[in-house]
Image (tube, rainbow, N blue to C red; front, side, top):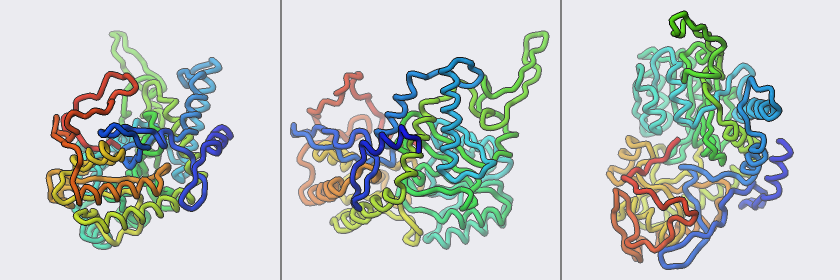
Length: 461
């Protein structure tokens, strides 16, 4: 780990449930107002949607900003420094996911961007499951693709996957690493083996997996992995696609422009006669790259890599505590896809009998200072199947910075809701549940006030 990152993380570490130290998250303990006029520490249980920055990640970005300059082809000192920082970040991200020596790391905006980039490189049909985030369901719609309905168990789902691949030639199998609805983890090494036996490759949507579990694409036989910095405590607009070079080296460039070419010849009439494209990763990174975002992502990877075992143990203890609390709350129904999943990260979705999901989320925020996510989480087919209810569900998600107190506050608030209902009145405005005559200051930073919504309640990748 670079010294700057190690020092910053050590200086702001917080204790876990096991007594170990984890890097601090910006905003931990942030006082938030309630509708009754009091304030409480923020319980952020919406990390699966987007996580705040680690303190050490923000420090790393701030250290870079005085040197900010355009990278590559620049002889100036700042440009040279930023070029080195960008390429070092590329190597760090590759190491974080166990990339092979000949794999390529392409910086993207996020997981959605990475999967859409890969979609332009796949030389054949794509198969995915119906439990996927929309990023994995929809990225392939410009080409040949099909969707396999997940069976009642993981084992049965793998049998169906094997049969589907045997029946139809397939170039790529696209699967989630961990469900963004239920947190359940698939046996990726086994799916990779099934895909390879059928002559297909596998891409893993690791947006929810990478912040919670180690990913080793070489050991697991994964061909491509896509991830988002904003899920990895680095919300500075960068993600990555990591994997095999050959498809990416011959694919049409994701964007046409500066940085993606080696040479352009212009004909006499002023038209571009011939273009020699650069190989990956630069082939797919046209334009000025997001150097602070790449550096932030690498800093988060380094910080997480140093504490992963302790972080997993911390999350597991909290996740078990939350699961038991939800199971013991009358009228609360936790959601699961499979009960034989080999692992589960700290993502828990549920419905509360007689209470719309949006109302539950508004109540938790306004009366208890607890942030959760409500709706269908950009996984409409799965949530519709699990709930059978157009209102969607509520999702609580855990991670670095989550405490036992946060979990206990949520469970207690749900017991109170089921027993007594909300203390405040709520209404639907522009498709969203909100407190009636909300007295809280929703623009404490003076940025212009809350924007009116139209009922969108998903969570981007």
